[in-house]
Image 1 (cartoon, rainbow, N blue to C red):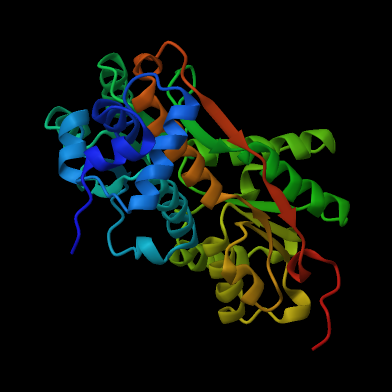
Image 2: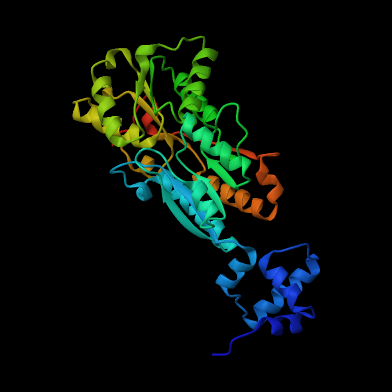
Length: 349
């Protein structure tokens, strides 16, 4: 096996060996023409830099950390939400030459991400499942003050300036409820997730905005609490089944709860012709497979992950932006997808 050396790349590109090193390690200012010559020479010769040596040169681990929430008994990687986001993160990380280090929160919610940075086990970090808790804010503030590059995904903290990539959940919820109102529904139950998550609060804001524009009040007896699981949808369905005479439609904060509600109402003996209109959220693959098809708000989870990974890895090349002076805030649009579950008349089989 013929091993190509860096000096051979330098000779073919007509540059010094140090220049080859800077180009391949992404260190220092390099003219674009020079960079392209080096990359083309490396590709032509089949040169692959030693990953360990490159990491040492950069004083980096080559790992992008991803903090995952602690959800006992939940199959995180099989859920649409986490699988799509992780796919987006992984795709971008691979393009940038990074590996993923998955970090699960402890049962009490504490996770020493700072320690991973100090020990150089991760170079940057993406945080999923952050909650509106004092301890969480304090940890994020310390990481920001120390200049550690991190980004929140699908979560924001009111009054704070952390790096974040989110979706417009207020608008998504507004579109869902406005759609039900346009169908003529007026008694719209809302099944939300835990208030500790900003996307739950955003969904409620969209729900209230749509009602307010229709000159309707938010009625406490139409508000129900779930935890984003299908099981919580089944539980809420038991409550809903006893008051369907005063409810004509349901908006659930994610598809898993919406599907649980559909199943629970069927188990309670609700016939298809008496089933309330239902709209979910996320537009997971399962939304198309329910009967009737579930209307849902489509969220670009893959793009959320990809965009967050790209932005936080860019901070490694622009470390001054990791100091909190100019945090980035990205908010991606969402889209309502209408199917049979939210129309007045269900299609005949």
